[in-house]
Image (cartoon, rainbow, N blue to C red):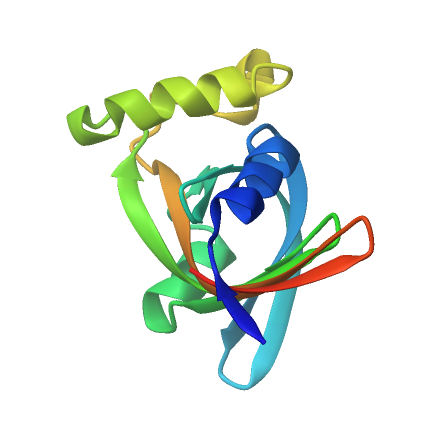
Length: 141
């Protein structure tokens, strides 16, 4: 039974994923699936990742934006989109949230804001399955 993103489910998602989280991100190139672990931050039905525009994942998503994620008793499908450079004016508010969420590692050389290819990946969720204390939530985002 599909449910919408109710306030109860949103609260669980925010609590569980509204901070630095390691999730598995799967993309497809030709007919081959690719999966990798990425640090992510959840907000309002989307996961955000700081990455490099020339990475395999971004090149694969440019051709086929469909993707899947998995982590901490949650799996979902979504659409991946490059939001552009981390320092772009339109990313200012989101970038501040991501710097705070990723503060443990952000300034250790992992993210180079001066590199024009350092970008924000938005994974806009479409549907997912969340488990919480024995309850299954089939979610439509």
